[in-house]
Image (cartoon, rainbow over all chains, first blue to last red; front, top):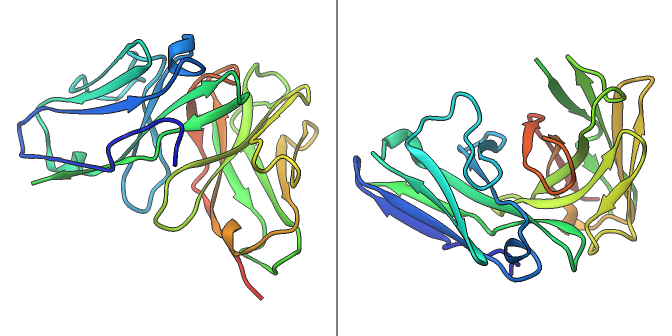
Length: 111
Length: 121
């Protein structure tokens, strides 16, 4: 069981908005460590989608956005497209464990 | 453009040591204030952080693997390496070498393509 909790699966129709949550604790997200998000398409390496809670690397569409509040963070995808069907992971750092953490991942299905 | 490439055996016997090397091209490990590291993904499962190393040699390891893991850097070859001892079938995974944006708590902006390592006799 991951220290960062994500819903195992989510789905949405094309054009819809989906939000993936990432829940941590006072020793990671709540301790002001940043949250980063990755998209992993089948058979490929993960790709950085959002870094430092809200920032998009160059080339990532603005349909993807991140937010953070308290001990949780969220990834929002608007205008859902078929190509967004992928696994999504959140990442942070835990001060008590002194380690990098990943959420368990969320499989997003575009209906 | 920075590129990372993993290399090493795709099959390792149980109880032996898994050894992988990551070759960095398009940039110098020793001139960069980044953490370089390893992340693995068992078949059909999520991402598992193994550990990270700064160019100076400072390391962070996953506590659950710390007794078996060594990550080292060879700046003369622009490479860093992973050694995981006493492997079992549970260590079968795709292993990715990575570069973080900066310090240990930041995101990973560069990934190798990944290499599948199977632990089997």
